Length: 396
Ligand code: CTP
Image (spheres, rainbow, N blue to C red):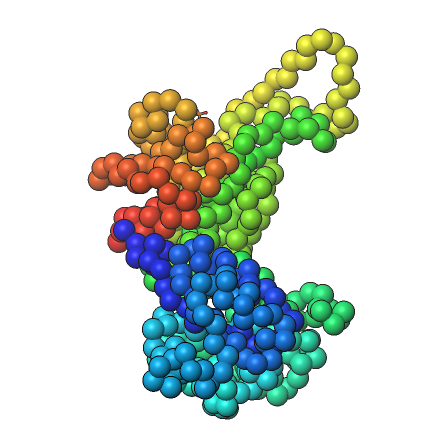
């Protein structure tokens, strides 16, 4: 269905001299895990921070440093290495290398192949905060933006020198996200999408509650991929163990009631609502103000029905396009079809609860007004791409 996430791309990873170069090792691992191939080119300074042998072992390709490297037969490594690349990523990009790029210098292999490139260039700056704030660096960055070079980061926080501020290289997982975003067609550009994710916890007392085993992985994957596809994403999430993506707006809502209120607050401006959260159907009639003490052998708790967020959103006078999830342990498709009808939503995603909840992989069937579409078992990121691509066609 989608070409970008399943297709591998060939990345030329440039590593320049900075302490963040040690993170390039992890970045290569993540890029390869995602299916990309990586060709590393280092500056001479970078080899003082991490060895070419390490990056060669991780990338599975010879690492080049020198313009005069005899391993490239025709003596033109800057052309040979840059032509097959779908994109060049410089991570870390030192202040010096940024200055070179801004001025078109070509006095080593990496700067030469950047100048000779035909493909897009992304850079992940990494330097001391004063170097980052320095007007020369800022001027150079302005120039690179004008030259349509993508700047990933930098982040802020504690730096290797002990100072705190902006200039840290983004973490490898964030850089991977930048790369994925770069390669993803902007199918959902201009769309506003609200996604609920994770589990709610209905509090019995201040420290205990009724919850479920949702990890947030499926909802977070949808939020991440929707962002990569260019949507403005609002994520309202409950308790989750999965790593949360960076999206346009994020709100934590721990209980079904909090989630209901938060969704209703944001829904008016949305084009799409995707309810992935495992929302509790019931909550305690009373939540004790103090911790409940044990006494009798049995304890009875009275529960009351919670409002159905998805059904209420779908019944708004002018509802967004609504997508529900049905996690079932038996009669998966029958229950999902019924839920789609009961909640009056155009699209529901059916899955086997005991296989889906908490796992990295999922196996789902999309049910909409036109039919039923079983998807191959895949990781939740891939499933998210397929669901959103399908959704895009429905929006059309
Ligand atoms: N949902 C919701 N608000 C609720 C309950 C569920 O928005 N209070 C949404 C979920 O996010 C999901 C879909 O509705 O998209 C799940 O449907 P539902 O029938 O509520 O599933 P269960 O809670 O599992 O219901 P049941 O226990 O009856 O199977």
